[in-house]
Image (cartoon, rainbow, N blue to C red):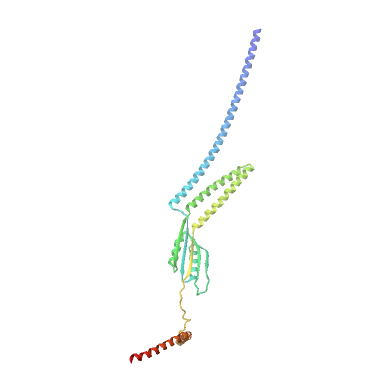
Amino acid sequence: MKKVWYLLLMFVFLVACSSDGGDEKSSDGEVARNDSGQSGMNVEQQEMNSGEEADMATEESAEMEQADTTESSEQKSLSTGEQRKIIYHANLYLESENFDETIDFLENETKKYQGYVVSSNYSNHEKNEQRFGSITIRVPSDNFYEFIALVEDGNLKVLDKSVSGEDVTEQFVDLSSRLKSKKVVEERLLSFMEEAEKTEDLLKISNDLADVQEEIEQLTGKINYLENQSDFATITMELVERRVDIPSVQDESLNTWEKTKDQFLTSIQTIFSIASGLFIFLIGNAPILILVTVVAVIIYIIFKRKLPRKES
């Protein structure tokens, strides 16, 4: 009987041990599964983060490659001499026989060459006085030398001429590259602003965006100025009228009697002028003349008295 109870106790003990072992195994399995699940989630999160970083790095590298490609292409265009930005200036000092016709000629030719007048200043004196003035025009740079040749080959006399050109191609390319990079920054800030949730982040991004947009406006203004100055050349012309004195036939008298009368009056005036001068000379120098006359008479008398004595 004791053996039976002993065997039952052993059986219960073994069953209890086996159940504990199963529980431990199941708990170990659950822990292992939990650990594996958490590690899997961590791995997935790391992969997502690494993927986002890779995407950002790829995007940045693509933008850098695009900027480098743009800059290299612009540098190639510089080396080949294509699309260069040159600002031309010319100063001409001209002489014309007909002032009004010259002004009309210059203004009409400026319109023909698709240019425009910037400023003009002319003198409006009387006909007998010499007129002068200045006119500043702008013509397309492609017509710059052609317009100057037209002025030189015309009826105008070029007294002085100066031509200059300033190459601003590198400055233009530099400003264009800076503008493109600023626009890329602007797009990023706009995307960050859409994704931002905190007010502090929105304020900071909006301030940065305002600064970038202000720089974009400044760069755009400088680029537009260089384009305008290089697309149109500036020519300043100083103009002076050549005076030709031609005697008027209508003002001259061709009557012989009138000429004789004028000559007679001129002769009378000459005689009166000589007589007046002689009278003034005699009266004005009378004391000296009297003294000289007295001395001459005394010398003559003395000389005359001594002359007969020598002969005797």
